[in-house]
Length: 371
Ligand code: ADP
Ligand code: GN1
Ligand code: MG
Image 1: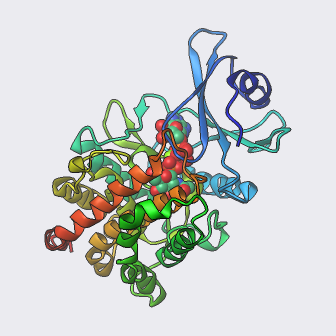
Image 2: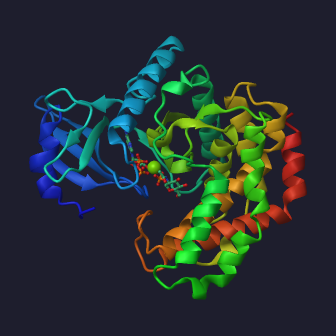
């Protein structure tokens, strides 16, 4: 997709949404890997200002933006009702879509790009790393609660925005295909990383098999539960709003739990080059485990709890496979900000997987405390 032209966005795109006040600024925002995000600032006639989040949806990745927006409208209106019933603030505790001037949920511009606008959640922060363990705990409670709130959502009405998103068996097949095709001639230099994945093929079946056999339930899950997909309230420190709802689909609680551990229990950044700084922090692992189980309000089964370490390991392995496959394919999926960015990212994931394997018995002992 084309680079963002903030002047053009101010004139042609933002003006087509029902914004309050006069738009004064449109600035790139956040550190998501998928969509292009901007923060809009509008001056209000009575003084003060109001912000919005404007996003160009990635339609290379989300092939059915219309279905995706239908999911978001339906899921957020379902959540709004539940939040109000529970005495919360639906304006702040879920995403709120701002319509276009002609009343649509999203805009298609003359290049065929898809745009949407959300209310900006004020006085809250999304963190790229765990600065305080309490934030991680509070994010766990919120992600667990998110899943609990969606427990009776009519799952069959959800569009599958990315088919097989956390199907580790099909992710493994995609990975092998990327290695075989080797379109950029990069495979020869990353044999060690490729072998790391190939050695773990058997693992990729474990959650898929458990779902297929009905040993663990299919639920409505978020599927992209990294720490920066939650807004932490600046005053209370609580997780105030789960954002980035593009991948809300039927899935396993182990996907949500595991992806959060992958990102937040790591002692370093997802793209850290110095692998000596990367390990799985068992204190953070335990804090998140406790918070997630509490947030789910007793709904996780014993089998799910026992499989939590496997969820953490497989979500980390899967993400590493995806980064490495993208590196082999020429960096076509995840946004990169430097040469070999995806290679650096895959290496942190594999370092984490190896560390989890080394700490396996302790991880099992930790989760068993919560059965
Ligand atoms: P991506 O899919 O690219 O990760 P996100 O929807 O997660 O995009 O948005 C990127 C970042 O923008 C988030 O990590 C968060 O910092 C910020 N953000 C997104 N939506 C909001 C919102 N409604 N209010 C405040 N900040 C937001
Ligand atoms: C992407 O959109 P974002 O940046 O929150 C990706 C996740 C990966 C993550 C790795 C739709 O998440 O699956 O785990 O990057 N989202 C999509 O950081 O592919
Ligand atoms: Mg995000």
